[in-house]
Length: 299
Image (cartoon, rainbow, N blue to C red):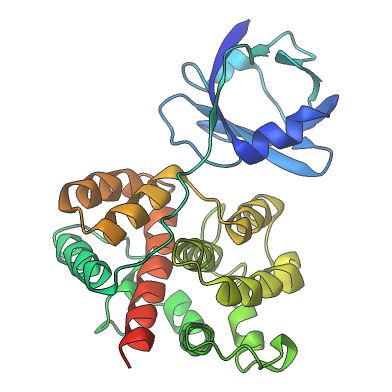
């Protein structure tokens, strides 16, 4: 049985470039993960989004593919081959990578874009579980997960403000709130826990804002505390630290920075389809970052 690969994320492509074998780590309804020498890539159904770790295969991921954990795969320059006869053809696959952020952020346009986003969010259903409610200034923590996350989010806002104010003389090890921030990792429900998704959204926003100091500090937290989460979520956090995430999140960041209402709406639709609450959890991190950035740059 053969399937054509449609697109492959840049990190997935790099993992396959010199590898010879892979092992199935886990299987899900519309995807499965391969461990390629310690690097994870996701084989996903054609209708799912692009991303740095994703290889989109033509059609659906279904029982006919006969994929199971610990199954062995062979990697060649032109294909992935399972020991059960499944072939994913890599000839002609398109490389996905996000568009590079612009070199200049117009604060007034960003503020208008953030207002447009939040206006549109008021008309949408927000997941009751997870951390999506933190994108609204007036929200109060109610659930167990929200109450557990609140101290970390306050520490994040302080750390981001310090970074945005260029307080680079503060050593990372002594930065206030590092222990609290690391408490987000592994927090909440989902294959990628809500705290991980929120932190990933923050790092993506910081990359788009060209705020390297904030990325370095948060990336260090990720490296210190990744044993608190699962391998799949850890791989997505590592990708976010490099500036890469699901395509809809990059599309949404670009639309906000341009204050393009139609593109914001389209990217919101796609973001809502990322996991059960993962898309909106990551969006909460993006909004928190943009709000703090605007506060820091206007003060």
